[in-house]
Length: 240
Image 1: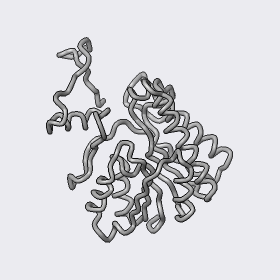
Image 2: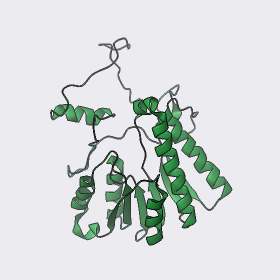
Image 3: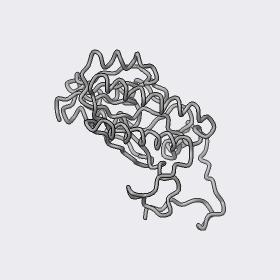
Image 4: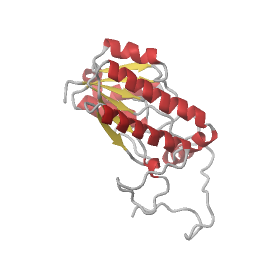
């Protein structure tokens, strides 16, 4: 409802910034908490450019890490939040395989801390950014919501574990309202051209990688696979 205050974790990221723009345009007050692990404060400045000076008055940025409970305590002790949209988390499959402990620490510990502080301050509404990786390798596509859950990498497992934690919390305390939002890799940019996906370092997703090759920040795009049943042997992603 317009006028309410929403906390967006990871709000300086690709999906976070687009969500914050929409919330502000719908009349919400928004606080962002982000540790800038894979984003920059310039993205928040771009949000302000997009929504204009009047709506920007309803936006607050906080540099903080969910793994540090003090950062959350400071935020919740001074602001009454009506709900949380939780985007903060590491999300690279390959990196999670190489360094699973980093993913367990960041994704699991950070989210558990968030639940604890939310409960303490009686904020019990959350939209949790899960992932379609919880389906593993589905037998057919497109995925539907009731497919079996069988995450196949540490990143996917953190999302699946956190879904289970959400279910357990809601079962024990029915006053919680938690939405588990599953999606594949989103692509695109804001129509203004001021907001898009521009991760730190080498991108892990295809579209920002292609974009960086196009503008010369990366030298070439590697296409993997040579024995798929396609014309040139490379993989083709079906939309059917």
